[in-house]
Amino acid sequence: MHDLVTLGEVLLRLAIPSPARIETARALDVQIGGAEANVAAVAARLGLGVAWISALPANAWGERTRRELAGHGIDCDAVRTIDDARMGLYFLEYGVPPRPIRVMYDRRDSAFARLGPEDVDWELVRRARVVHLSGITPALGAKSRALFERAVIEAGELSFDLNYRATLWSPADARTFVDGVLPRVRYLFVGADEARTVFGLDGSPEAVLADLARRAPKATIALMQGADGCTVLDGGRLLRPRRRHDVQVIDPIGAGDAYVGGFLWATLSGRTLEDAIDVGHAVAALKCSIWGDIALVTPRDVDDLLSGGPSVRR
Image (cartoon, rainbow, N blue to C red; front, side, top):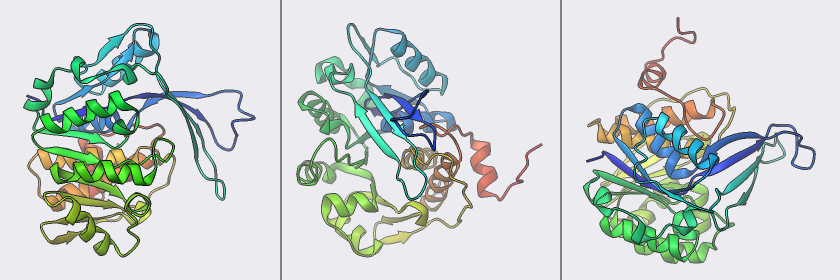
């Protein structure tokens, strides 16, 4: 039995280092990234038993991705290898203010898009302590949506990150689908911007969380607020991180996934909710200082940050 099972697509991440633009780029930095895989990697690196369900192409890119994720400690035995398939891509252009970070996707007809419910050993999902899904998967197409829906049925305790992508579906379509999922969710992660876009919630964190709680009555809900941290609602209690961290942002992509991975690690390790919030906040801060989608952290990194450890470790 695994502590955590995640299901979702991983992409090749092709980044144009700032301040270059796509139209002037002569080189691309190649890494991998995907919301559910990012969460799996963080949780595995911190010590949980984690499995990832997905599909990869039968080529060198697929082999590299499997090796890299297994190297973080993820059990990839449930990842299918598909002939004559491709990996999805995303191109990342780093802006500096006032230019935003821009993301362009090229993921149509990827190996993951061919993965259906009949291709998964659902016993792995049924036996997991927690199953983590995101709102990206059901937006990818009918087959991926069926995969997501089956995972929701088979999961015991469900963790869900809204992860709204405007390029995949409209706010109305996302809201209609997600409203059917939220009553099953035990741990819910929503960005403040996503709450505004998908659900039209634009009040105080307390008001937004109260509305989300009506939609997800069984859930501990984390409202992600970027540089302002997060606010968590659990059974009527409102909690926030007890520590703030000075962060020099190198790469914010994946910070939300880092929070989720840290929060679930602390929760499944038997820590208090207050500790889980602090850990999630710390792992997200650490991620922002690291290039790439995945937070390359250890438990000692987290403990050092939370304890106000030395700025130079010798």
